[in-house]
Image (cartoon, rainbow, N blue to C red; front, side, top):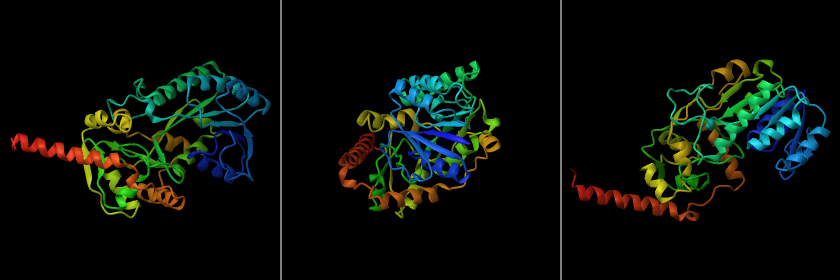
Length: 340
């Protein structure tokens, strides 16, 4: 097949491309040309800026027709509308990379299925905009303008990706673990989280491409290991070759007051149960969870080490100040209540 990947150099894309090439597809990447292309000798490249909608649509019109378009960098409804204009009548299938964050976080049942109610707070614009993009594509599908397959990953990690933790996405938490320093966990550490390695997520996109069964459908592509955040941190420490970490549980509400920007993802995501049903992707796309979290995280951390990406813990003094303040506050509360 003649396949266009919009993006092509990001975390998931870098897993999709080699699989498509292995299957003998003709792959073209569209991006700004600012990142190194690992498979430059075996892929074609179109350089352009997706944010310039008019130029993007002109470039796509000039590129001809495609058997499948995989769009990894559509983030706003305006970009979705532009994609409909660009590819209507020019591709047999359009695969949209969405997110499981489009759902309401207080769902009535778990695991969450693809027909669960959508809707997020305006404070989480990434999720809101992805949901609006899906709405644009549903309308295009209904009108016969575009045949859309929607893939909804959860947290995807791997070589070249970031570390997700309570206070953000920096890698200094790995350095803290290796030094035996305490780690902040939101709440009591019991909410459930699921992280899937890039290579497993990529196989679902490849399984969707050119697959008539997937036309007009949406799929979860997430982990089958449902980890509490306490277990998540212990697995990260194991993957990093660090001792079992001391976990410091701080109420989420307090974190949001003390460090609202750093802890914002706790309010919008981490404090909720993130567990999803992958049955449809297994049945239709051949999706299979093959890389256990500890193994995959060890590979990701090895990549970070090789690229000198592990930040020193001393670069983030706020972290210890927060732990010290919480421990002092807790001691004072226990003393004041006298064990009541």
